[in-house]
Length: 198
Image (cartoon, rainbow, N blue to C red; front, side):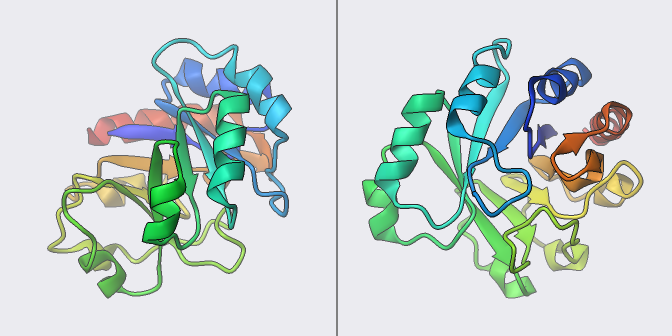
């Protein structure tokens, strides 16, 4: 199971996540978020990451040209499009991306294309990071092998994901001391528990 620690705002938290075994780190380029990081600050952190750790840039309601510019500036590996995107957007975006499904009902998950990877989060008006959980029963009977689940996860409730065979997990508030500041021990506990599910 792949593990992404999102909402990284400083080098200390980034390296703590890497040391604990994170596969990917998320950087929020949405200015209204308390976990927002300036592209130049993200670039400095990303430049110090070891090989084989992916950097992910989270964007909300941005045009493809601006996203591509920030990706080139920071050397982000993959874009997390945390808003509804259409075919025109996909056509114009030059960067590699993963689409986020902000699920409000089971049908939002059932309707997904089976040959595409998605990140599935619980719908909140503020575009995530609020610790809201998604109903696990919505995934029953669904092939989850290409789905990354986010929303309200922590080391105490990860066990509930057993048997669903999710491709990955994405956590932000569940490993924090405060918004934008991670708790090293919570990161360690979360990653250890996620690895037990693999």
